[in-house]
Image (cartoon, rainbow, N blue to C red; front, side, top):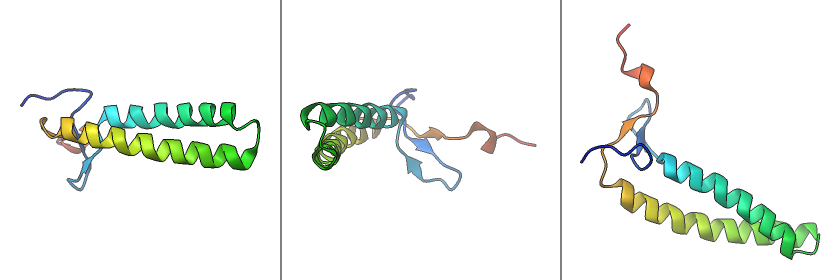
Length: 88
């Protein structure tokens, strides 16, 4: 199948498939969201904030990454660094 700029897995210099751009954006969104929401509901208690943020981020990241991995199986991997394939 053709490549999607958002869902295609990235291949690193060793040849391993790394997470897609959508997975990387999901990580940034969920970490920001869980930090904010954890602080909002923790009544400014650092310990509760940390536990709420950690628990919420762990759950949401795993769910999202499972979904994105199933989607990215349809696409061919693209190079993480384009200069690796260039001839010198």
